[in-house]
Image 1 (cartoon, rainbow, N blue to C red):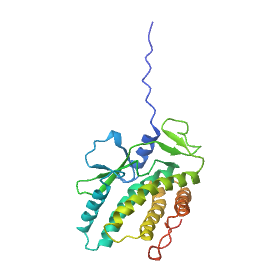
Image 2: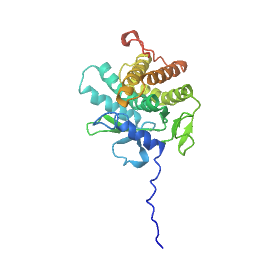
Image 3: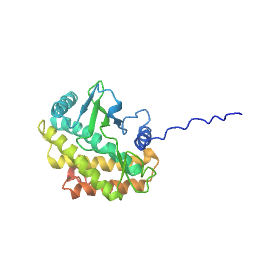
Image 4: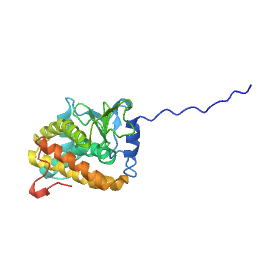
Length: 238
């Protein structure tokens, strides 16, 4: 009797890995620009926990590094703010705008990675559970939480991101002038720019990305954060 050997069944791809693979493909030659790592899979060299006690020291080192390129402390602090804001908001905006998925961008979940020059080049998550929409193909799978709609996802994301952003702003303003309105205007500009660029990079709907970007801006505003900007930066909107 002949025994029929079936080919091994491939293990299902986890939703986080699925999203991460797509984000790595967005920027040709620079897979870390939008993607994040699961910190448990990474060696801890050059990584630091944003919610940890070394946050102030690490951000001060980033600021000192920026001062090597400019003598103006306002420019230096805004450069560092932009890098940190991208790590918190710019990255999580990518899966939200393109897929309707988000990870937790909260202070207690984010790790940052610095390259050999001391610049932030990657971010990691302690918990890589994704929040998805009801119609998502991953709904019902492990390591996934279903949120009822895009607006709920925007509100949850803004609330969690604000825990990290407030801590970042507190650290930065102790180093150089960076008032609340200016900082949150940079957050708004990050959302507006990302919502416009991401669908081009990812071949997704510009209308959907704009709608979701607007929902995230609205959620920040509703929570009391002035992301609509200053006159000097324009009025972030989509």
